[in-house]
Amino acid sequence: MARGGDAGFPAPDMARDLTIPRLFLQVAQRYGDQKVAMREKEYGIWRPITWRQYLEHVRELVLGFMALGLQRGDKVALMGANRPEGLWAEMATLCAGGVTVWLFQDCMLDEVQYIVDHSDARFLVAEGQEEVDKGLAIKDRCPKLERIIWDDPKGMRRYRDPCLISFQDAERLGRDLAVPDDQDRADVLLRYEHRAVRREGHVHREAQASHDGLEPLLGARRRREEEEEEHGQRAEASTHRHRV
Image (cartoon, rainbow, N blue to C red; front, side, top):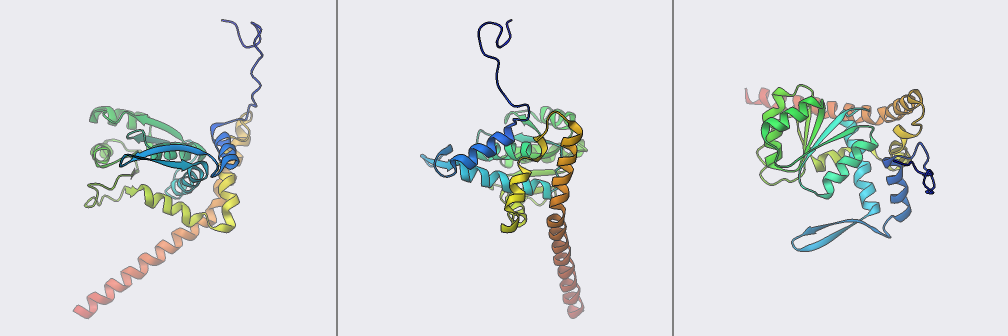
């Protein structure tokens, strides 16, 4: 088969460092609220989502996933219908330097276990209760699986497994980190891991620098959570003494 340019067609002029995350950021910043990125039908009405909204969700999820421990090269399995939230999670994973592993929504339990285990997925993004149930059923047989992030709250009220976190809470983690003074840092994060495809060592150094740059924010959040937990334990102990 003839290559580009061999049969009268011009060879593709594409920069070697052009990546999906970088292209996504460029398009989102270019169009903002001026153009619709996607639509979802809700109660018979098509709900528009602009490129600015798309970028905001992805930015929050990138930081939220990293706050939960996602590292460059980690695998994130996704299972659910064709919805905007699934696309946001997929793009956020790519922007954080991760690898996405899609599963069919109607996969049988043994199929889900095989794919999640074989891919060494650390996170599973599950649409709703049915997908969460599959994730919980296989968790003990998938040693690398640490987190299950769910989107649809229907039927999830009584679920208390510590590995579970809602999609909204993951985004909230990102919002807590993306304070106004660090908005540029969040944008840099969307670009960091693919800036120099030609030199793997350079890519690794950029990725490490981005993670190091976020460490003060992540550390501050961890300290705040530890202080809140310690305060709660003291209050509980004080209540117990009064009862005795």
